Amino acid sequence: MQILKTILWPLMVGLEAALALFYSLTGSYGLSIICLSLLVSIALLPVSAQAMRMEAKDKNRLDLMAPKLAEIRAQYTGQERFERIDEVYQQHSYHPIKSTVSLLPLLIQLPFLLAALFMLSDYPPIQGRPFLIIPDLSEPDHLLQLPGLAVNVLPIALVGVALTEAWLRKGSTAQSRRRFQIVSLVILVLIYPAPSGVCLYWFTSTCFSFVRAVFARIQFAALRH
Image (cartoon, rainbow, N blue to C red; front, top):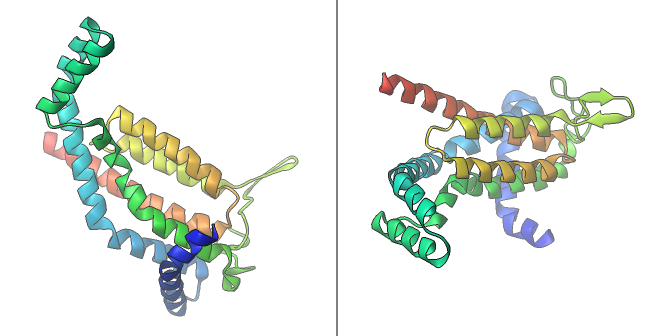
C-alpha cells in the first residue's frame, strides 16, 4: 500500500491543492470535494468518450457475428468448435480481449479515485466537518441506523448508481455488464469502510457518469425516431 501511495503521491498533491483552492472559493469542504470530483471527471471526458465509442463498435461486431457463432455452438463441440469460432473472430478482426474495453473508463479514473482515497482518508481539515446529512466527512457516514447496526449508505448508493448506469449504456453488451457488476461489487468492499468524504468524491464521479449515460440513451432514442 505504501508503494502505491508513493507512486500516486504527485497526483495526491495535485488533488489536495485543487481541494484547497475550491475550499477558498466555497468555504465548504463538502462542496469542494464535489467540485474536485467534477473537475477530474470533466478532464477525463475525451478519453471516456473514446472508450464508449470503442465499446459500441465492439458490440456491433458481436451482433454481426452472433448468428454464425450460435450456429457453430449448436453444431460443433470441443476443439473443432474452438477453431471455427476463432475463424469467425479473425474474419471480423475481433479478439475476446477487446471486450474488456468496457472497463477502460474505470481504469482511467482508478488512479484518481485511489489518490482521492489516500488523500481524504488522512486529511485533517475535514475532521469533524459535517456536510448536508453527513455528520463527519472524515468518518464513515453511518446514515442508516438499524438495531445494533450502523449502515454506510453512500458506498451502497454509489454502487447502485454505477450498476444502473451500466444497464443504461446503449453500447454495452451482456458480457461487459456482468464484468462491470463484478468490479462494482469489489469497489463496494473496498470503499464501504472509507470516510464519507472519500465516498462523496466517488459518488459524485459515479453520478456524473450516470447523467452522461442517461443523456446518451435519450439521444440514441431520439435518433431512432
